[in-house]
Length: 259
Image (tube, rainbow, N blue to C red):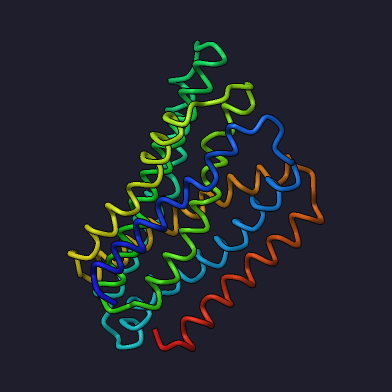
């Protein structure tokens, strides 16, 4: 697969975020539909966290087996740092964002929150793009394709998260506003894919994968909170299972195809 094809797929993975944004203009979106898509994303992302961390840990595991202690320790520390930045960094971003919104009226607060969510999503989507590009550049085409598929499905659901504050306040955003929010949230996936293809290094790969895993795990935590508020336990459970199965099925298809 050429670098141009990887870049194109990275762009598609990022801009699937536009699939979820139009929900913000619906007056009464079906609660079961939103809950089902949310749970499906959780299942896919749980698989993706496992898959990404498996690849991120592989160089360290190999170094331990070969008794290259220095390489193993360095790889483990880089992975831990990537996870910390991806996971904890977004927690502090949320705290900063909450302080910034203090004192605003409801509609201004909703619009500002939607923008900040888009920015936060864009930051971790850049990390996801780096993981895609670096995996492809390192010859891990199978992982790159899985990341593209997983992030594409994931980004499609992120649109709901961006427009949720607007829907809660009964504010219908314009199509132009939705286009801007989608560009901020989804565009960095494409940019990260381009950058990642030109940075081939084991430690960089581990860092990018750790950063992506941490950010995905953070989103899973947030989506689980949304699922709990929906109070549709049976639907949520089945859709999470479907998402996990979809992740393993995608992996099986890609592996069988020899990618």
